[in-house]
Structures are given as structure tokens and as C-alpha cells.
Amino acid sequence: MVHHPIVWLTAARRPTVWTRIADTGARLCPVFAVRDRSGRFVVEIQPPLEVPADADRTVRSEAVARQLAERLSPFATACPEQLLMRPVETPT
Image (tube, rainbow, N blue to C red):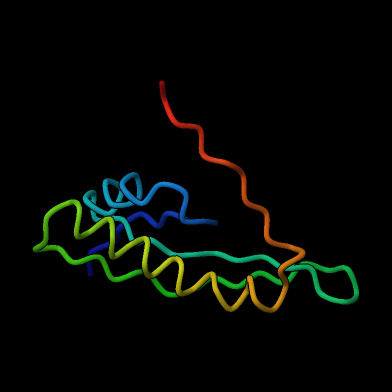
């Protein structure tokens, strides 16, 4: 059995970074935390993303971004008030 490090992701901020991490053999596991009605946080650790190993970096990054968006969508729909998005700064 081969053990790989696990990287916990919270949002699809920069898919190329996550693709580079996947290049190391790490599994990319999205993690979502929402506050329930009692005020407690409920954390869901999802299965690893499927990153195509035989594609170029652009295709791999697009696959990561698409999967993260698909997995984030149900949480954003159910609890839009809890969705925290920060603007991504563009280097000048």
C-alpha cells in the first residue's frame, strides 16, 4: 500500500496550485464546514478529486476547478449566507 499526503481544500481559489500539489501524488480532498441551526459547525470531508494524470496542466486545472465548483454548489445553494469568498488579487 502506498501512502500519499492528504491536502485539505476549502475553496477553488487557484486550481493551478492544486494541480501542482496533485503532481506530487497528494490527494485533493475538499472540506466544507457549515454552521447548523444550533450554532455548531458540521464538517464534511469529501472523497479525493479525480485529477487526470495523462493530460496537460491546463486540462488538469480545468478538471480541478470544475469538480470543486460542482462540489461547492450544493453548499452554496443550501447556505448562501455562509459562503465566504475573498477577491483574488491579480499580480501587477
